[in-house]
Each structure stands twice: as structure tokens, then as C-alpha cells.
Length: 182
Image (cartoon, rainbow, N blue to C red):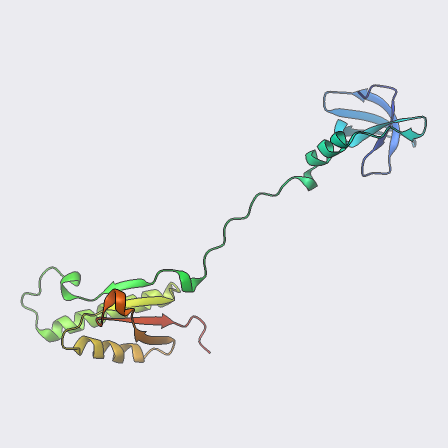
């Protein structure tokens, strides 16, 4: 459509001139000031005797779509769900889940192992900024439950409550770790 000798104007720029060279994708024009400048073919519009040839809507739309500022931006990655909707970390403190055999262990040894495991897991959750931890202690005589309450009570940034009764019954407690304690 555009050939050597045609008068053209540049879209989005106050530049006009005469075409001196045409390639498959570029047009080189000599401006009215005598400078040679190269533009993509879709960036120039042919004019006739001072009046611009009005391109069709399809041509204008096609050229605008090819310009970078009008290209669709890639979709953003989906943001992570809020921390409170993440599933809670579960720690099962049943003794048979922690070791293979209790042979030769006293009750005190078993409770100590369970408390050490609970402390280590809570420290891990705090360091990794995990907001909720469920400690499954079982029902039993309630000794482990009371020891856990005492242990967790020494942390300032931890709120203790009973875990979901439907899922865990009476044998679990839920800890909410306050991330920015005042």
C-alpha cells in the first residue's frame, strides 16, 4: 500500500515526510527537516496533498492491537489464600505415633517425650509462621492435656482453645499463633 515517494505521517508522533525506502516491515522516511527515520509500517499513515487518507476502523484497530501498550498484560498469579483459611498443622502426640515401642519406658518417660515433641513442633510452627496448630493428645486420664496447657501457657504469642469437636472429639487442642504480638 505504501511505496517510495508517498507522503506519510507517523501515528502518535508529530512527524511527517516522504517515503525513501520500504521493506517488508519498515518504512524509512525523510522528514520535512531533512532527517531520515525508520518506522514500522503499521506506525505510518499515507497522506494525499496535505489531507490524510482516513483508514478504515479495521486498519486502525489492527494497528492499535499490535502496539505494545495496548497488548493484553499477562494475567497475574492467583494470590495465596489468607492464612486463616489454610489447613492447620496437625501434631499427633499418641505415644505409638512417636516411637515404635514403649518397652522399658516409664509413664514419666513417655509424657516427657510427648512434651518435648510438642515443644519442638510448636517452635517449628512459630519459626515458619504457621498460624494454627492442632495437638492431638487423646482422652486418657488428662495428664498430658494438663501438661500441654502448662507448656503452652509459657508462650506469650499463643492462644489455646479446644479443637473441632466433630473432627477430634475431646482429645485435641488448637493453638492459634499470633504473628505480631504487641
